[in-house]
Amino acid sequence: MSDDALRTKRASEETFDLARALDRTPTCQMASAPASLPCLALLALAAASLAVAASGDNNSTVSAAGQIRVNCGASASASDPDGRTWSPDAASTSGVAAGASYEDPSLPSTVPYMTARVFDSSAYTYSFSFPARPGRVFLRLFFYPSTYGSHLAGDALFGVVAGGGVELLRDFNASQTALALNVAYLVREFSLNISSGTTTLDVTFTPSRNGCYAFVNGIEIVPMPADLATKPVPTFANGGRPDPMPIRGDTAFQTMYRLNVGGEAVSPGEDSGNLYRSWAEDSAYIYGAAYGVSYGKDSNVTIRYSPAVPTYAAPEGVYATARSMGPTAQVNLNYNLTWILPVDAGFYYILRFHFCEIQYPITRQNQRSFYIYINNQTAQEGMDVIAWSGGIGRPVYTDYLVVTAPGDGHTDLWVALHPDVQSLPEYYDAILNGLEVFKLQTYDTDSLAGANPPLPGKGDNASGARPKKKTTKAFVAGWAAGACGLFAVLVGCLCVWAVCRRKTKAATSAARIVDVPKAAVRETPAAPGLHGPTEILVFSAPR
Image (cartoon, rainbow, N blue to C red):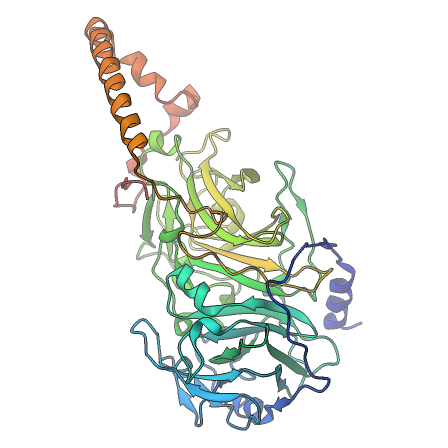
């Protein structure tokens, strides 16, 4: 049996039943699709894409050939700022080609955002053909909610199905989603496995009800390495007793977050492996006022990939930057470095953590060891990047599987890091370079679809947003009474302080680091000895 056949056989045997019933009630009556859906065979696009020259990292094992890009609604080919060519879909006999009424300054490019294909009467299917079975692919859908002719942005409500019947979007309102996220455009990325014996990928857009319409600005298909989605086998973080949990090879994923932790955003043209992924900056998701410190690699450190972590795992820009807790051990021991990531409730998620030690003197095991918590559950004890990766400048990544509570709304994923004092490391600190979050399809409904996020000030606050404070007469009166009481307490405290002011400061100092073993305190060098992090721990007003 060949290696490919053996891997296929093993993937089919690695079954993990995530099936669960999701009590989803449609918000509107779905329009019935005609018996024979119109199709557009984009054979020319596939043939043209094969001639695209490989670009990006020369050490990558991923080829740019076979990639497909459609500038929907356009009449001629055009290039984006990364030099990628987008072909028109003018051969379509269904839908309406339209231009956006306004170009938002935040758009990264006019291509593919300023033209759209609008479907206002029935479902429509794009059928993409490949010369051979491509295996697993990234499918990216680009949306710019705007007025297109007589079609208002708020009237777009539709669903998308692809990959043999996987529901990607349901009752999707791009305008509401963009407003809720405070962005001008949206990119929805999915990872689909083209089944054996199939050389086509169908993507169907369906208006949700009469009076609504579907639209799409761009469609991108990029073949991807299969092991990037299903390996390593993720660990099911179930509260202190993690277990390996293999994922079925035919599972569909949606990329919820791809963060360059501690670094700047990485554009598609800067990604590795010719995969054209986008990596966002992470600070918007950090909880509280303690941001830790962000920094880049030492000039004499080289990022060295390996067969276990190939170049396409993440670009060097991700591994060459990091965020740690800070230079002061006593401060680090009293907080968690935490990110809050709103997601759709009722799904399983894979969280991929990217690590790489990039500054001296961290070169040996047990110099920096820490815990990884996901949703207040211990996903990993004693995370030692040097021990896992094999040395400074060597990337490593690890996957964890979590499940969210059933529901139709939104919930939060909490990711936190905290020093591990049990192993008595040299430095009480934690580090993270990159973080990806993937949503897994439900097998009972073959769905990845979640609810539209609530607009600011509406909804049940399920996304974890802090409610705005309300000012009322009772509220003001309560504060006034509280202030008087606080003044009395302060007077009493001043009296006590006057009596106790001569006591030694030793007891006070010891009380600040109660959880640190005495031996660890004696053996731990001063944290500022860590070479590199020059920023101080930043405390800002609570958001």
